[in-house]
Structures are given as C-alpha cells and as structure tokens.
Length: 115
Image (cartoon, rainbow, N blue to C red; front, side, top):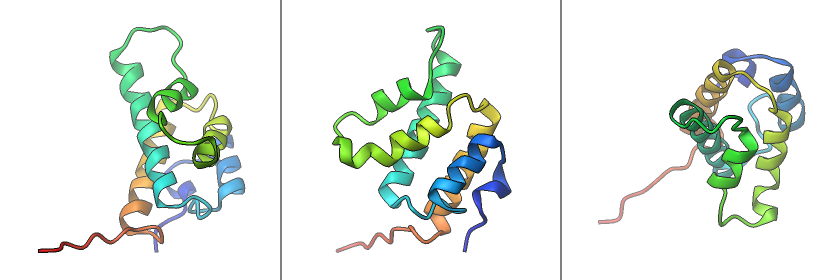
C-alpha cells in the first residue's frame, strides 16, 4: 500500500484534489494517473525551457492530452482545474506521489512478457 498524496505534498489545492479523488487518488485509474503525471511533468519541463510568458497547467493538458476523447480526459481536466495556481515544488511532490502509486499502488499494471 502506498502513502497518501498528502504525505508527499499538502496545499489547499492538494487537499481539494484528495477530497475529490481520494487520499491515494483512488478514483483515477492507471491510465488517468499516467496522463496526469505526464501533464504535470510536461508543464514543469515547459516552464523551465520555454520563454512563452504565462504557461499554465491547462496549456500543458491541451498539448499532452491530444487524441483523448472528452470523456476519457474529464477526470484529468477536473484535476488540472483543482490544481490551478499550484507552486512548482508542490507539482514535484504530486509527481512523486503519482509515481509511487503507479509503481506500488492499487493501480499498478503488471506487464507480462510473451516469448
């Protein structure tokens, strides 16, 4: 069992995220957690290397989630809206929590090799 998100980081936005999706973001499936982590990572990368002025999580979601249907991305969009204004170091903490959950948590996906 993995630790709750608030073990890694805690802000008002994280508290609202946990209230909506559960202490370990239980309401998000494996793919949704991957998509959220990818969006957060892309956001941090982009604000580090690009000089575009105001770049938001919504911009990162628009670019990261291309090809998803509205239904498939609705939880991610809701999470991004909740996280509006979150600080970069808190994003890192959330990425750390998502990584732990994806690797060790209840949404862990077991890959098998066929040879």
